[in-house]
Amino acid sequence: MKLTIVGGGSTYTPELIDGLVRMRDRLDVTEVALQDVSAGRLDVLAAMSRRMLAAGGHPASVTTHTDLAPAAEGADIVLVQLRVGGQAARLQDETLPLRCDCLGQETTGAGGLAKALRTVPVMLDVAERVRAVNPSAWIIDFTNPVGIVTRALLQAGHTRVVGLCSAAVVFQRHFAKVLGVDPSRLTLDHVGLNHLTWERRVLLDGVDVLPRLLGEYGERVAPATGLPVDLVRRLGTVPSYYLHYYYAHDEVVAEQKANGVRAQEVMEIEGRLLEAYADSSVTTKPELLTRRGGAFYSEAALDLMASLRDGDGRTHVVNLRNGSTLPFLPEDAVIEVPATVGADGPAALPVAPVEPLLSGLIAHVTAYEHLALEAAVHGGRDRVFRALLAHPLVGRHAVADRLTELLLEANRAHLPWAA
Image (cartoon, rainbow, N blue to C red; front, side, top):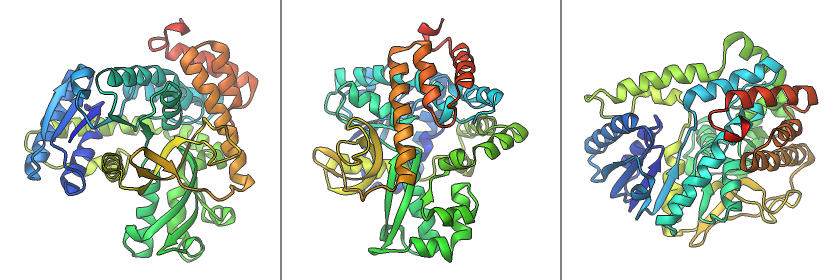
């Protein structure tokens, strides 16, 4: 099969190539088509990918494309991992909100909105161009903010689209390590929105061991959430790391102001990774890549690709249309829950009623995502303002006003209507 990676010049690409080598029995890829607008980065990552495949004895060829059409033509899967504006834009997303004592983060809060404004129009264009040459391909969106982007694509009529995040796989592997068991024995009751999820049960061979994880192993589980163990135990769930931006907002802002934002560290890591990739003696993914983020990205992506190709009915945690799965949300909302992947794509498994502590925040952020998508598709300062005002991490009119001006000014080059 042919796999196309849009954003093939990303430093994440070797993670996927490493997965192809390790999981060749699961996915028989014969061609990896790397597409990117940066020819320079594309050349570096293509050479690195070829060396990794050769070293691993994998027969797949690597082709490079700056034009999307030939890259997507004939592909079974098109995986999209874009960052519009690069790391420089991320740095703005994470630092500008701090001027207003708001969280600086690339996928949620004001920074997440700025990323959505830049990204949604580009992703809609990418999907249209893929469909023009290959209407049967599945598009896997790994581009943040995944929930908003996936919703945009689905609402535009691109039905063969699945949003993907590795958070659930990360927790599954972490819990398995804590318990000393094989990850395949664990099933998660994972519910929420992208980057706003909770693990409500952790089933080991069908038996819920979450109370044991929170009790006996709480000191090992809590650090993965960014929250103190006593709070995690009081919650009775394991919230994703992104929930600590909500539950401990002021503490995170104070820490960011004192010690800087994640974007600064990532920019330094990316520079070092690109140097390593350019070294012709490097044939395996560098250990430094683990610090870049996206742990178990390849496992989540390649397992999903195999199920989309085969319609094998396996369960994956994905981002998909809500329908009636969470009855307190609109049908066209995009949620992140376990789903079986059959011949027609993913279908959400039934979800037990969601308790108010969770459903209230899920509904609140869903309303923001609706307004964020309106702003990203149609533009306009008032739409941006309303989205910011609706976000629980902003929510004050004077702050929303100030952030609207800061974000639009910083992103003028990517938003023609903001001029």
